[in-house]
Image (cartoon, rainbow, N blue to C red):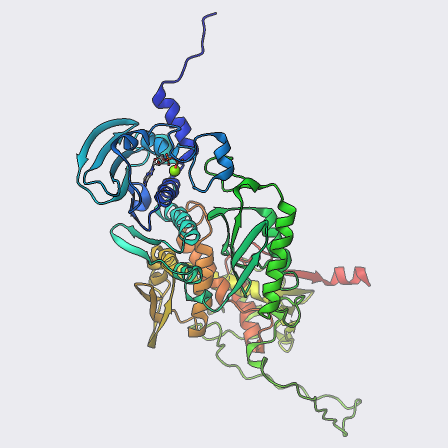
Length: 609
Ligand code: ADP
Ligand code: MG
């Protein structure tokens, strides 16, 4: 048999190794920003084109490189940061492997401009696929600029694995946030396709958090501070917890962003009794510890580190946070076993409790025949905003099977159950626990989950109007304006066409989102909750092929506008809801796949008694 083992050519080996370090534009952003910080820069500019596919460029005012170092920097394992393995235990720089520039140069076209402080002449270098194609002395500003162009130009397979611009940009912003948070004392800016998205002057940590994530945090942040021999802890926790999928949670160890589930648990446990089911605390915590107590010698792109004394750190962290929570009077409010949906309606919150008054009818004779209850007057139901008149109760149960009487253009596909006879129209629904609607049919009782039923109704309406693109809008007398952080604005912008289709008259100017008109189904007071939901959803990394934007938007609208449990409903509204639900294409499931109703038949009932 002939021999079959071959040594891979250098360029192939390099590309494979590069794959570990540079997976997407965001990885290059991280490496280049970190190099600028290691070079002692105080001003760092990041320029991007097409979410980093076409260009990622970092310009710094750091120490610069000599002409020889400039060439060497692109060799694998070329670093100025450590000389021996022992140096790892006294490490104060972000980089130390000497792999990033070599990796970037093997999968992209690179242009370097650098000039050392105190030198007149600097160096220009062009590299393509690891080969230096041009080197010249040039006059350039002090510091370094590294431009990475056309990422994966020579590895089409990897290029095809990149996600949409929105997703790649989100990854880039995550890295940018982490570095900018780790170094509030440095100035950063970010330009995407020539538009300045972030301009962050050097500032305090508190202000940096607000610069990045918006005003909402300004009043929420509670400082944490603890100094011991082993480590120092400083930073902020947020007074309010969130149910968001993407809460702000940052640990920095020696100014390096890390993820550590054990420490996360320490924080969460300090919040014990303050968090409801599914809620998460937000935190920005900075740990300083002697590098000899940590091991960061792990995979290049991973953000985990090991501590040699993690139990002590856990205890310190937990007590530091508990201390701040106590000091700033963040205490459990009323009752945390309560479901948020059962909370006291807002309008009742500040009212005093009143002693109930009993009226006794002294003439009441239980043996006298009751007079028939008069039929309730019919009125337009406010929450559904139908253009056609609200169908009456009896129409619901006679109309569904015949289709002829139903005033809605959306006909039910089939009658889901045997219907109630006309003469029994006095039968009414029960609104149980302000959460379920119990509706009576001839031989069964249906228990309808109100919030989910309404979500289904709204979802189908919005989906239709967004797809058809000619929804109604009601102009607002006074436009509604909301301030958002730059990254939130970036999340909203791609959804503008669908939002307009849904009936929102919306403009974005800088960080201001302005509404001049709304779809008729949404009230002004609901807009903010809707946007909040929208941002939360948009930040999930849902592959775009799975959900269309239209569908996502219809779901979010349905979720944020649907009736919440605990909300009062008039008899008319209850009827309307049942009618609307069974006019839907799919009345069984909520847009989020939850069951909407269940039933109890007479036979089942009898078998139980
Ligand atoms: P590492 O950061 O692990 O040392 P890199 O490949 O990222 O490896 O960089 C190699 C070397 O190039 C660094 O050690 C540093 O000496 C030099 N270098 C890289 N970027 C810069 C920069 N922006 N300014 C000055 N020197 C730099
Ligand atoms: Mg580096």
